[in-house]
Image (cartoon, rainbow, N blue to C red; front, side, top):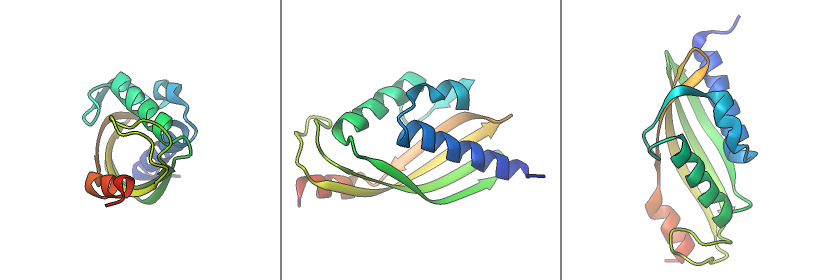
Amino acid sequence: MKTLEQRNVETVHEFIEAFWNENELESTERYLSDDYQELAYQSKEGLKKFALTILEAFPDKHYTIESIIGQEDKVLVRMTVKGTHQGMFFGTAPTGRTMDVTLYRQYRVVDGKITEHRGWIDMVTMWHQLRGN
């Protein structure tokens, strides 16, 4: 029998694979609660909009979970995202350069659904990689 933490980790892992790697934006209906709070992108729709921005700018992007830890209702994730800058990204024209940056995510899972998310990314490294300086 799986612990609560193991089930929560599985939920978050499945969400990252479906939403970020398989580009199943509607997977939010399956994995996110009705009262979901998006603290990094303001809302479910903000999260989807940001995901589309990433997909358009980095169509070959891939997220790799480096570390994932569950503790009670919280799941902490350290992952990397790699991709080639092939489309507009926040006003920056495509450079053809590759990004390889670390992201940190904190999820809260209640009754098998993600109820809250906040995230951090190493923006300094990302912009240095894209601009080549």
